[in-house]
Amino acid sequence: MRPIRIVVLLLILMASGSKPSHADPDCAGADQTCLLDLLDRDATAIPEQDWRDSTYRELAKLLARKGEEDKAVALLDKIKTPDTKAITIRGIGMNAAQFVKLTKEQYDALFAALTSKANSMRDLPSQAIALNYIAESQATAGDDAGSLKTALAMKNEEMRNKALYDSSKAQAAAGRIDALEAGINAINQVPFRDKARRTASQIRADAKDYDGALHLANEIENAYQKAQAVLYILVRQISPEEVSIE
View 1 (cartoon, rainbow, N blue to C red):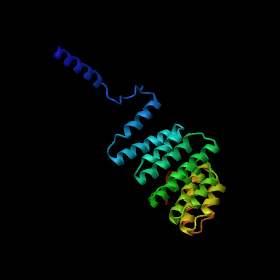
View 2 (view 1 turned 90 degrees about the vertical axis):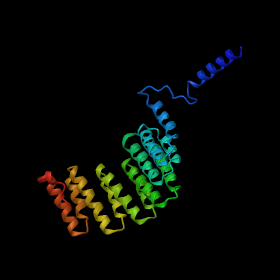
View 3 (view 1 turned 135 degrees about the vertical axis):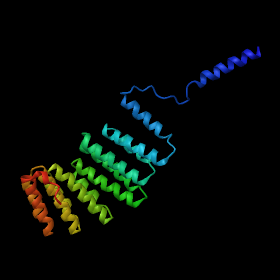
View 4 (view 1 turned 90 degrees about the horizontal axis):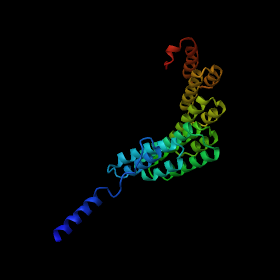
């Protein structure tokens, strides 16, 4: 009888071992919610920190684009690499700003959460980059007051100016001239301020808003940069194949 008992025991063990203890969920290929959960789970098994963090980065961007910004923000705590966390903050903010229709209150909550995550970062250069990205995302979402507030709160002068510059590009693309001028005027370095005005002028010229482009060009202090901005407006109309002029 003992051999029979052993065979039965082996069969039981084989049956119980035929499925992993954490069996894959039964996902359909088009079941995005299930696949997102599966990716979240599988990412935890990646031993290399950089690769694990980059996987969480891409997952967070997808979640934000689907309007699941709370889940996306929660993933930031799993990312240990500072620069990857900063880029993930940008990915969440920009995807929510560009592809999701949130209410003002929802955007306020999202950007407050992202700012809190950025301010908790110990790596100061990456923290500054993250705050820059938040200001840019706010401008992209149409929250000009929030964008300006975020940028002006930055202690690093160079990154503060860059945040104002990057935000002005989003505002120029949307045609919000008053908002971009408020940000550009807060840039405290003349060359950087002129660069922002010239870039914004080119963006408006590309949109065929030649009056707006000229208005911005006329505010440039450097004579050469101003001439180049006016030249761009002319070339954009007369010889558009040469719009790559510098």
